[in-house]
Structure formats: C-alpha cells, structure tokens
Length: 452
Image 1 (cartoon, one colour):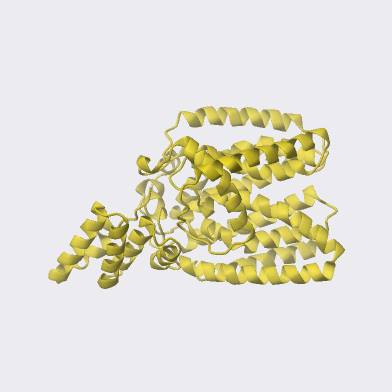
Image 2: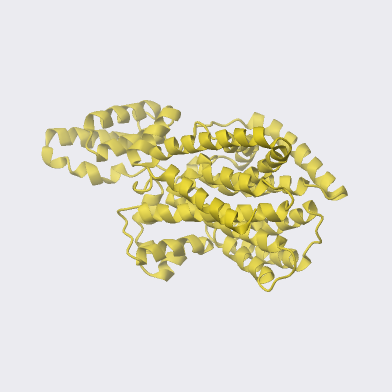
C-alpha cells in the first residue's frame, strides 16, 4: 500500500475508535482511579511528589501530573480518557509498523492486524479505566523498542531508540523486562542476525532494574489477606492464559469484575500442557529458524502476570500487551487466507469488524457512570461481593435509597456481617429518620469502592 493509503487507514481507525468509545468519554473516574488519581493530592501537587509515588511507574505518573498542571480537574475524567484513546490509536500504528517489519511480503497482514486491534472491545477497559494508562504506555514503548530492533540497517536513531524505549518501558510497567528476550526470539523468527549489543546491554539494563525493583516496597492488594498462595495463583494462571486468549479472539460477555473462582487442578493439567507445547515450539525454533519465536512471545509477555500474585487473577486491562500480540499472531494466517481467497475472506473480515464495532459500542456504554459500570458487573458476577457492594454505593450517592438498600441487602447475603454493609444500612436508616442527614450519603467514607 502507498503512504497515502496507510495515512487514510490510520485516520479511518481513529474515527472508528472515537465512534466506539464516544458514549464513555465524558464518564467520571471509577474504582482505583478515585483513590490513586482523582483524590490523590501527591499526584496533583509537585512533580517530585508525583514521581516518588512510584518511581518505577514514573512515565504514567508524570503524564497524570502534566495533565493536572494543564488545568485538568479531579471532577472530570474526559481528557484523561481522551489521552488514553489517542495512545491506544498510536499503539495500533506501531503494531502495523511491526507487522510490516515481521512479514513485509504479506499484503493484508498489517491492515488486518491494525484494524482488529483498534476495534477490539477487550481494550476498552484500558482506555476508560485511567489506571490502564500504565499498560498503554508499556505497550507503546515495548512495540517501539521491537520496531527499532527489527528495523533494517543501522540508522542513526535505531540503536539509541531501542535503549531509550526499553528504559521508558521499564519505567512504565514491569512486564517490559521481557523486551530483550522478545527481540532475541524475533531474530530467530526472521532468520536475522542477532544484534548482540542490543540484546546483551538490554539484558544488563533489565537486571539492574529488577535488582532496584526488588528493594522497593510492592503492594499487591489493599487487603493482603485476599492474595492467594503463590502456587495456587500460578496454577490458576495456566488456565487463565487460555481464557484470556479466548476473550481476546471472541470479545463477548466482557466484565469489569470477573468471578472466575480457583481451579488449581485444571491449572496443573494445563501447566503440563503449556510446558510441553511451548517447549516444543522453542526446540523447533532452535533447530531451524521458524516463526515459532513470534508465537513464544505471547506466553513470554504473560509470564510476569503469572509470577506476581495479585488479588484479582484476571483483569482485561492487564491483558493489553498480550492481547495485542495475540492479534498480531492471529492476523498472520488470516492474511495468508485473504491472499488465496481474497473476496470471500475480505467479506468475512468486514462482517467481523462490523461485529467488533457493534460489540464495542455496547460495551462502551457500561463506562458512562459508576452506576452503569457496576450494574453491568453485577449482571455478570451476581454472586461476587465487590460489584454488588459498589453498585449499592453508586445508587446511594445518587440518593436512590430504596434500590441502594436492596443492593446492600444483596451484598449482606453474600458476605454476612460485613461491617461496611452494616454501616451503610445504618446511615440510610438514619437519613430516612432525619432528612438533614441525606446529603451525607453522597460523600460518606463508607461509600468508597470496595477494592482489594
């Protein structure tokens, strides 16, 4: 395709992203965005205060601070979400660039990968949950680093560009420690001479980063009691890996707060399957240069998520980079089919994109307000305490006391004796007896989100 066509494709993708996400752009801050951003004075004050909040996520916190300095207020998430949306679009452009470098002879591969990525509703959580910006930034610098590494020749910018992007990725999110290994795997996939300076020096930078990171306090959850034992978490991630892949390829019934449960037995079985499968791909790639290296990057990106135990075993926003790479892999055989049966394949893909636009537009509506977000989560996880409790909080802040009380009673049945539920019910009862107490229901500390 000519440069003009690529530019048209890029702006077509941008227009579609805006069309999909337009219902949610004006929505408020939700969930972790409230304590970590909107109500966090350290992020809104001096630059050093913002960066010291977590220096290993400095890129994201710098962007928050910069937006507040430009006049953004904690009362509106619109411009923060707009920034995330633009960043998602730029990531799609980098994915297209990477597709061109990986398979320059595949005519439809870059366009299919880019459109599939831009329109997939699995990424709406990363756009609309402002905390998802860390995943957006690390994906941007991860893809940019690999693009610099794979670029033909040794341009004046490519080598320093690789190291600059690696460092910025490390200061965005820890998943970027896999960049040197990903570069090495892609060298094998393309039968390209390994750029030893980039790989070895990059590994050294990563090693220093890991050592520094280990000495910095890590907070895995607001309530440490919610974190499962490491071996249980790891085993569960072995089946969640495939669940995540399924959600990416078939993005239906998406949910902000999944109730997956713990299935370590299935995880143990799939751990053996994963070990055999990915080891086999690795051995074949070592014997002869094959595209197996590209396949191995998906579990490589997912590996840090499986090794660091968190209270939430699965969040769509954490899948951002892994899902982007999985789309890149899936678009490769789709483009090969399109070259053989152009008409039929392109019609099918056009229908698939139309479905993605429809699914995305419906999904974006859930992000219009706290109430709509938690209402959607309650429908899909009716037996989980957190979405039911937060839905009740949202109703309470609207002073919809009858429905709020019903939701709190629902949460009470799930978790009998929970003190936060009891406190909220008491405040509702007191407000009904004394109308002067009603306004307290909007801002009471008891209405803060229940998060791990």
